[in-house]
Length: 223
Image (tube, rainbow, N blue to C red; front, side):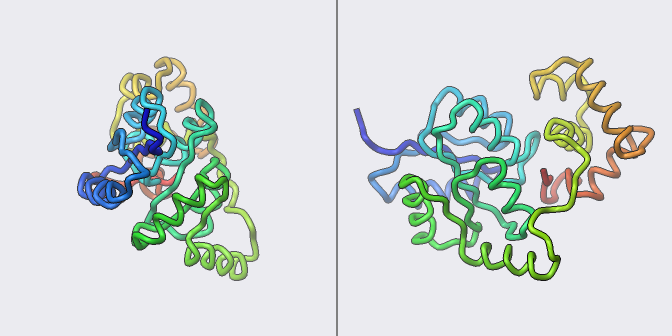
C-alpha cells in the first residue's frame, strides 16, 4: 500500500484545478485522488474517498467553502483542510479558522509557499499566508475589532439564502442539502423574519447585496 498523502481538490474553475494538480503531481509524496467543482459534490465524494488533505476555494456554487469545511471536520476531523482563496480580509480568514481550517493561503501563492503550507498542516501546525496575516492585523488596527460584525443568520440559513439567490426552488434546495421541503420552508420563513423581508424577491436582492450569492458569471457567496 502506498504511503503517499491523498489529496482532494475543490474549486469551481476546471483550469485552476488542472493547474493545481500539475503542481502537486511533481511531488511523489502526494497523490491526487479526486476533485469537485461545487460544495455538495465535494462532500459526497470526500465521504467516499477519505483523503488526508482537502484543498478548497471558499467561493463555490451550491454550498460555500465555509459550510464544506464544517461538514468535513464533523465527519472526518483528522482530515486536513487548506483554503486557497482570493480573499485576504480579516472576515474571511477568521471565519475559515473558526470553521476548522488548518491552513489559509492565497491563490497567487508560489509553488514553494503551497508546499510549505501542505507540509505545515501535515506536521500538525496551522498555516496562514504572511500577507493575509498582515492584512488581518491591519484590519484589526483600523477597525478596532478582532471578529467580524454580528451576522443574524445561522450556517444553514446562509446555505439556503445562497441557493435562493442562485435561483433554486425549495424542492431543489431540499434535495441538495438532504433535508425536507418543510424544513427548507421553515428556514425560509425564519430568514424572512430575521431580515425583515417579505418575499423571495427581497431575499434574492438581499443575497446579492450582502455577498451570499451573485448573478451567474460573478464571484460566488460569502458564508
